Image (tube, rainbow, N blue to C red; front, side):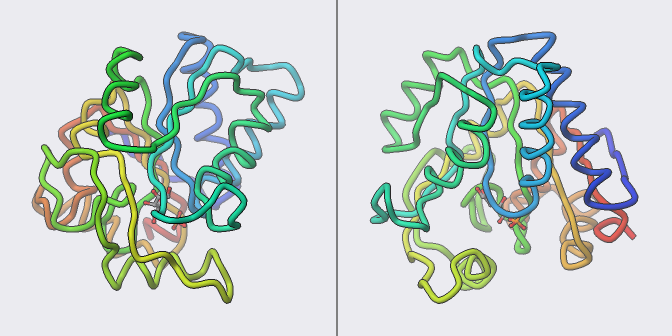
Length: 227
Ligand code: F6R
């Protein structure tokens, strides 16, 4: 595990954008699994600035959706596909995407890509990755599931007065752990306990993020999350 602690969320965004840009320079047709959520947004905004400035080119990258709620239409403000398009695909001028529509379609699309090169992930307050809720063993496949009360609560901050959908689909632990590289972004004091548990506690399905330690993992955290 490579651990990179930055003073603040802005430093985190710069460091994460540096790592992702470098990967894209080395392999312009990188396939990237893309988290939504609050943590990576400053990173994606920084990448968009670099694309606009012409210092990195994502036009051959494939962006792969990590998770989605069930039963939300494309124009629903809660669509994670919509959030991924607005924050990542469009500002980075990405031409190729894989949407997460069903377990079978997703598994075939990832196989066609030859697996994923980079997984950009956030850390759930309960240790979830994507919507791989605890417990999720390493072989947990891409699947639909019911969100736990903890995740319904942590997701509520995104949608104001709108309810968090109860059902979800997530890329499996199998797909995430098979990515050639994983980047876990962690920001804020509310993540401190789960970050230390994930990195220093047992590697267990009860803390899905702890299983990332078996992969080529870089963690970039800010001081509030590490401190
Ligand atoms: C979002 C996702 C979630 C979040 C996690 C942390 O696509 O997969 O697992 O990454 O819940 O969310 P934030 O970054 O909002 O704290």
